Length: 281
Picture 1 (cartoon, rainbow, N blue to C red):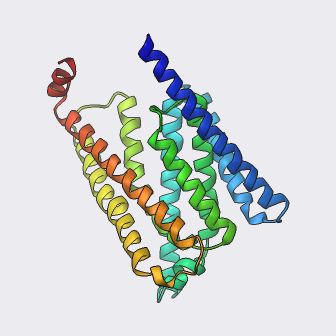
Picture 2 (cartoon, rainbow, N blue to C red):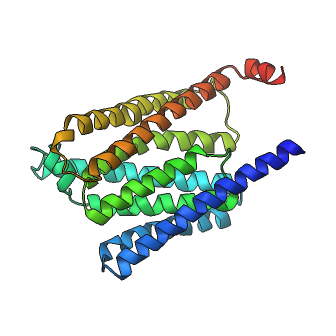
Picture 3 (tube, rainbow, N blue to C red):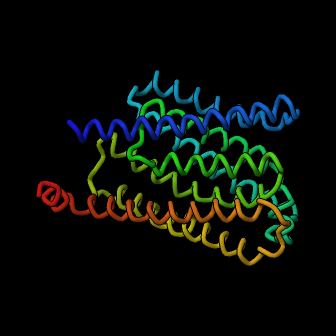
């Protein structure tokens, strides 16, 4: 009973803190739109509404299970974002703008075509997802990693959008959504009851999961961090470099934790009997 009460208190404290930060974030966005006439930021609101409407549609047509609904919407976001990032990069290449597109001046001060609205739209998703997780308590622990991840992204994304700097850098970080597709596919697949580790489909899913985790998430974020450190002297004095490094350090730490969780899940799925025996012990 005492342990249950302690867990409930952790949920309440974490929920209160992250809800307060989300409200402050929303007020800041409204302020920028209404008082500073930043109409381009309407894409943030549009993104949040789009994914909330998708949430309601899945809840009404498919399932009312909060975790299934949340995971399905997350899968949709990962797919849309991955396609968007690939489209933006290919579009730059085909339009002959590939020369120097990864130079410091372009990554910090430039904005590739469609990059700004794509970042706004994705920012709206993270705000929606944060609220959905808070409403249905789809998190655990005193400092839930998923809520902290969303908070870091919202801070970094909105500051970049407000000042229109490092937008291209952040588009590159979203390459990791390629891996998120297979994370969400795995969760949906397991909730649908498909858990045969010997199945060819499951084996292929794990191959794609690991390949995209290594290349689209870990390697890409490490390279971005190295690029930031190499170009540190080129940044103007201010908060750009500290916030960029803070965001990337946070993402790399979260990637390390995700890698451990992914390995443990892979081991459990490959050896279900052994995992069950260890759990009983």
